Picture 1 (cartoon, rainbow, N blue to C red):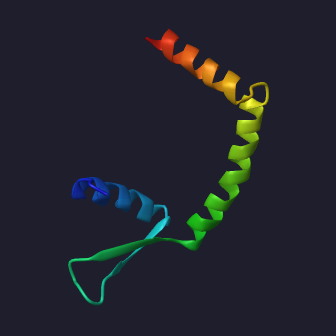
Picture 2 (cartoon, one colour):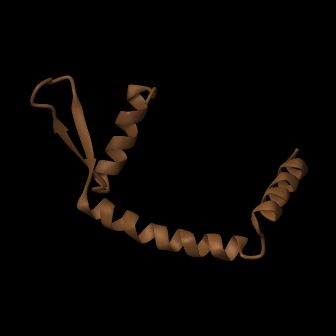
Length: 80
């Protein structure tokens, strides 16, 4: 993933405290640590997709693909 190990450690600790991740040492190589999502995290992620879809529909209901691209391009131009 090309990230600094300290970045992973810092963010892992925060996620672990919230019980979003679990950690397991590799049985074959002690240098390897395997991280996985907890059931709590998987359940939470499953609730996000429908909510994101509803937000997208609300935000982009008025635009087709071409109008959305045009709108985004105008936003970028205005931001400069």
